[in-house]
Amino acid sequence: MKRFINDPYDVVEEMLEGYVLAHKDYVELIKEGEAQGRVVVSKSAKKKDKVGVVIGGGSGHEPLFLGYVGKGFVDAAVIGNINTSPSPDPCYAAVKAVDTGKGCIYLYGNYAGDVMNFDMGAEKADEEDDIRVETVLTTDDVISSENIEDRRGIAGMFFMFKTTSAKADMGADLDEVVALAQKCNANMRTMGVAMSSPTLPSKGGPIFEMEEGDMEIGMGLHGEPGVRRGKIEPADKVVDQIMEPILADLPYVAGDEVYVMVNSLGATPLQDLHICFRRVAQILEEKGITIYKSIVGTMASSMDMAGMSITLLKLDDELKELMDYPCDAPYFTQI
Image (cartoon, rainbow, N blue to C red; front, side, top):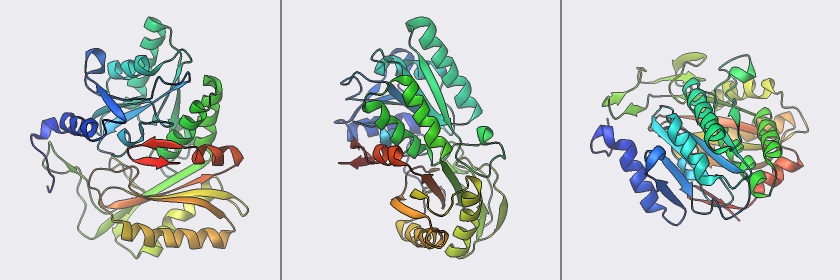
């Protein structure tokens, strides 16, 4: 394992401590009480009378979730152990920390542990503080199930966080914010490929076994099975295999306009990502689909996993406006 850590069981706490020290102008860490030192809150969270946006999940996917807490973006992130859902009390504490009287929305990936614990946090907020909390799950991973509501949430979560936070910051009420989040989720699709396992500090090595020189098309952020494992192929051939199911699933058709994200799963460099984006752009041009804007970089990782994912968000005028809405967070800023 080639990682810079101290005690492997202190990784999350030390990462959070370092993060808030590095970005003290943006965020603070709530350590006391139910927050259990696992709630990162924007310093601008209560400066507007608006719906609170709370995200979260297991650590190990940085800059997801921490990196998107900031002005005009997410209000709070709840952080669990590596690849593990946060417990209910910090989920509840995050709501208490950001609620301004207009209620809150939870946004996170569709994983059983997250669903259970965030739901318990929402119930506690309702019962003890009369705070209404609604949830919209991200289900963008096209190959994880034929039923959209059963799919995993992966890198497309970024688009959900961005558009929903903008809608809330513009003064929409909770029902409007929920409707927008559902709309964004319905219009995006993601698929990935992995070429190695991430390394788990507590184990001192890989989470799962993968032969040197192999890849797995469709693997999830935590190493969930994909659709095919085989030898690593040229970039264009890999992108072709990913784009075909993405385009067919919505489906995306000629005349559509999309926001594109090519995301590193942790160890894949920008050089490789841009080679992949080149092929994505070629395919979309062939299909008559227009690229509005693009993001190429590490937006949702799996620690040091080698691999990448591609996300398309089909746009309309509202989603364009929300994606372009100004925000300032440690790992995503636009004017």
